[in-house]
Amino acid sequence: MTFPQAVLSFAVVAGLLTLVPGIDTSIVLRAGLTRRRAAAFATAAGVCCGALAWGAAAAVGASALLAASDIAYRALTLAGAAYMAWLGASLIWKTISRKGAAGPHLPADPGPAHDGTLWGSWLKGAATNLLNPKVGVFYVATIPQFIPAGMSPLAMGLLLAAVHGVMAMCWFALIIIGTGFASKWLRSPRSISIIDRITGTVLIGFGARLALEPH
Image: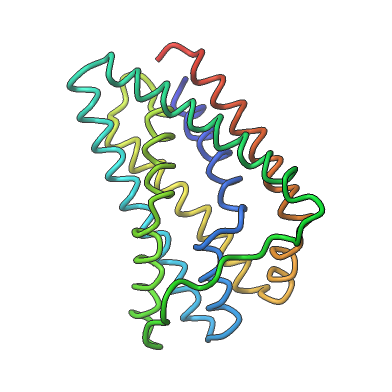
C-alpha cells in the first residue's frame, strides 16, 4: 500500500478502537467529572504519551525483525492480521453474548489516585497506559501491517503512533468538555454494542485484507 493509504487505513482502525470504552477512557472521564479541567487534560496527555512509547517500542521491534529476516517479518504480519481478525470477532461476539445480561460498564478506576498536581495527573495517565499490555499487543500487531515498502519502520511506526495519539487526544477533549453527555453515552449498552460491532467488522476486514496482500 502507498504512504497515504497506510496512514488513512491505520487512522480508521485506531480511530474506531479509540471510541471503544476502556481503562484509558475511564480515567480521563473520571478526571473530567471529579477534578478540574486542566487535570483531566493532563491525564489525557499522559495516556497519549504512553501510547507513543508503546508505538516506538513496536516500531523498533518491527525494524529489527525486518533487518533480520523477511520471512520472520512476514510471519509477524500474518500473526498481526490474525490478531486483528480475532479481536474483531471477539468484539462482535461480546455484543451477542451480553444480550439479556446487565449492560456493560466502564472499568473501575485502577488503584489509588495520584496527587492533585498536573504532573500527578499526567503520571497517572501515562502509567495506566504503559502498564496495559493490551496497548502493546495492539501496536505490535498493527503497526507492521501499515508500513509501506521502502519506508523506515521506525519512522513510520512513530508517525502512526503520533496519528493515534492526536486522534485520542481529540476524543478525550470531547469527553472532558462534554463530560455530562459523554458519560451517559459511553455507559449506554446500546451505544457500546454499536461501537463494538462496527469496530469488529472493520478489524476483520482489515485482517483479511492484510493477510492476502503481498508485503
